[in-house]
Image 1: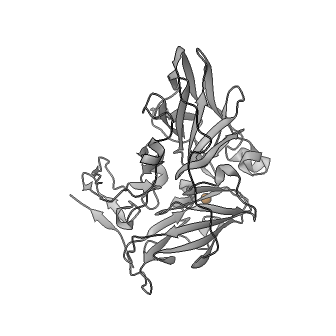
Image 2: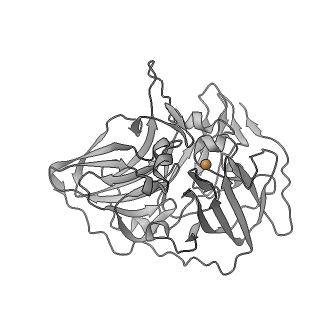
Image 3: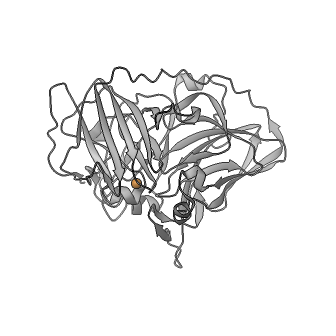
Length: 401
Ligand SMILES: [Cu+2]
């Protein structure tokens, strides 16, 4: 497919396709700047399973301010396997994007997150798909919500107002093997979740976020300073008095290959501390890791600090092999591209780098708390042919008109 991105801002920006498997030069990272009035036209083959992806600016040092002003959208991928499942799929009717951003409004009505904790800036109210106080009129028994945390710093713990379990069917990169019932679905910035909810005629039900220190994996005082004890109404569902029948959701949603950590070509460690990964801050001209194409790797990601962080990898969807040495719970056992890296926790990820070798164009890995990313909590990896090395040394390609 080809996308034409025209920059209508007064400043340069980039557009990154979060979760998409594609060549690095089409990825929209900080090297692919689009100048004001210029059009950038990346082209690639869609080659991944059905999933809820998204896109947002990714320029070096200023990603937070661009995303905080609302630059974020969803990119939905469909395929035959997902289409064959009896799931709600009428866009905007029973299959609904829910893009959640927190914000604050200055006196002039300008969106600007208010306080800045060490997670980043936290707004005191939510927007869903850019709207305040949203509700959804529901005309079907079962609704599928595609939740995206497009906030710069805040994490959410999604619950239902009547305490019913949250039925999770998909994570960042696609369907889970089977749906999972949870007390809450936690999403840190950049993560997605698809959930199903069954309503009764006339019912009013509110999707809420009720974050707790425990859910955030943090001690109470640190959690409170970082918005990790705040609660919000997110979206009200208003069920019609008569509802169209919906199909039963099957027990099995997908077949996931086993997480095979047995034949990894390389093991790399990524230590998150302060605003650094492995003691480094991002440098545009430095390739931090070089991966050989057509191999599988084990990446061990450890947050050694008391601060909340996250970890997002471009190019591939990965699987979590273990968390602090234990197998992941079912809701974290599917395809992921972003994880919440709780304080003092170690994650073992298995990643397959199938194709798109290019020694001249790197992909990024970084904390997706965008203020942290802007502070330099990011690194670059290149995927190369066997025996080759990365050759990129400097700079940025500006797409000018
Ligand atoms: Cu961070």
